[in-house]
Length: 244
Image 1: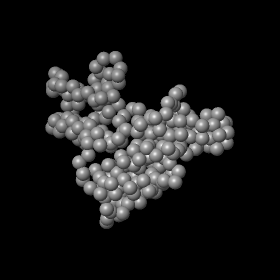
Image 2: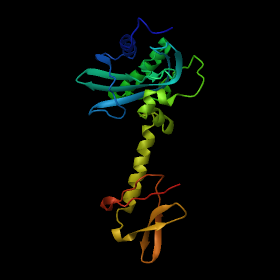
Image 3: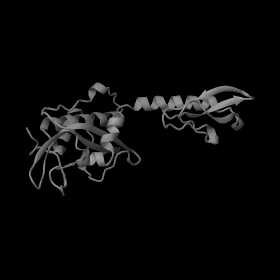
Image 4: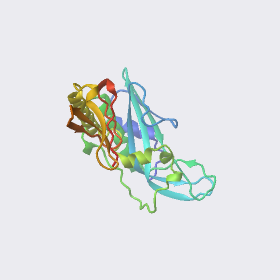
């Protein structure tokens, strides 16, 4: 069943009512929305890997993709809520001068996406505890064959698809990011008492560049950082790098 008469806005309103959210919220489309570009007070949620169906407006060729991304920015202020939504599009691979086409979604897919959106609203603005299991996975009910056409994907052009492959969804693994920050802070705190003269450059093995702490002529300890990760030590701006 494809979504026609029913709209994103009406389904969103139903989902908000089901979750007992009584504040007025508005869902609007914004094709200029950018990932990781929220203003003050705004939160972001990216629904990844939704199944969408496309049709070329020139040759009428149809295709399906299970890598359609939907970006949401949301804000709640003085009892009013606003959600901005951007659905990333794809181009026909058969037409030379093809244009970006909007996907169609099944009703089940839209309901799942908006369910997840409302869950994030509850988490961000109503302080409701949310578990990863509360977010529903979009069901791919149509066989999708062949590789993903990166050259014809708007999300790929903006680096969103590649970012999804390199790392978990934006906000899905915030706790892991917080742990990394805490670990780096712990390292920096332990090194804060070392004078600048204690730091000298050295080379470990082939292709390995790092810094080591020396006391007199004896090496005291070595500090390594993950690949391409910069480690700043107070105001001395000493960077530790390792090339794998």
